[in-house]
Image (cartoon, rainbow, N blue to C red):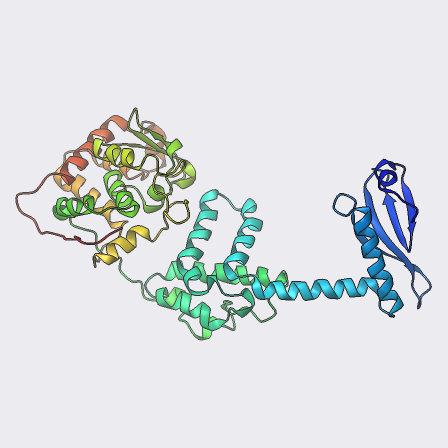
Length: 406
């Protein structure tokens, strides 16, 4: 043994430094140090090198142990490099049986998201897969995912949510393609449309459009809100806040505390989370502020965090709350409830109500001249809406959701 730990540490001149038994320390011009095992191939009589690791991760003692193991392979007539590659392949094959679909999906998203147009798009990917795919096959080894699993995910919503189902299929296909290229799958992609699912599912462009569930009539909003306020849980509070602000589901559930100005009762939704692509300020009624104050301290980032993950509520949380109540209207439908009330029960101008929904008003010319977001007028409108939600009508049907929890 010619080298010492001190010599290895202090040697900075580029070159090869032998330790004996085919072990060498390689030092590059940039003073990068690594270990190699060098031997002469019996068949070709050429010198060959096997990397044993960087000095940063492999000590002199460990390098000698690896060199000894390589020499034993040579003595048994085996090629050290081929044996190392074979062992790596075996470990990779074993890892493939352990890597789940969810793990592959996360790695795919991490790899691709830097090239996507926005954080919202990344969030949509994660949420779609988490909502529909994960419950069915998220925990399965990705190598075991087959057509039966894919159909179990997309078939239930193929008719009712065709656009969502189509995007979901495409995303599953992309994840499985990534898994195959990465060496975690060998079978053909069961989520592929051509030659696969096109034989089993109707063409998306020809599926009859399913009508959306009706919105709750505004005459019933007081009874609904009264029952909703009695329900404990983050899902219920998020739904209450969503209704009071007439926001979209994704805008409310992904809201963060740095978007909230409680002193001035303003919620500023960034352009990346608004459908129109423009920042949107939402005046908060006293009722909406009360909801937020009750949420303080639950999470440092999100207004409405998941109790399990600490991340925002899933995009199904509020809908599941309505389903437990056996209601046939959607969360998004409350925006229609608000708009119907604003148009039928108030004298607020149309453009004020439309701006409250973060809609663009008028054509391009009108938008160019309409530079004000009518915040003061929208504040009056949202305060009136909150008051209406809390005022018992003279008559009205009761929409009971008692006994249901978030």
